[in-house]
Image (cartoon, rainbow, N blue to C red):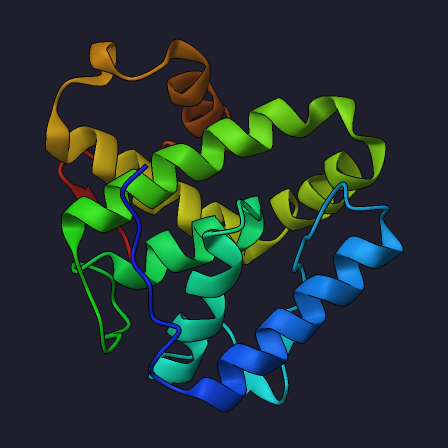
Length: 168
């Protein structure tokens, strides 16, 4: 997988992320590291900032599906919120990979419950609209894993999705 490394932007923040990762891995016998909170070390992860993107990037690179979706959304250049770093290609990569990870976690009860809680949020619905737009913009849904495409379609309100444009 192609990924972005923002760890050198703020070493102290990177160390806090690393510490949290170690704690979560120890607490789960090394099986999972999921960051489902909307805040980390006083930083709102849904508010555009370089620190938010650094945190989301760190946990996204560890395959946390929630962080991957949030990071993909933050990278999406056509998002109504303007984030410091944007890339359509990276947004696409992280988003599609995040959905695959979320689908594959259905055998892990704790992870599945965390993802299900996130899926019930308004934030998740907005992220799925972005995922739908990503698929719409690349215009080749038949080249995307059918389970991923079905996941996106099953989690959006089609009345809010306009072909070629996400309603903000």
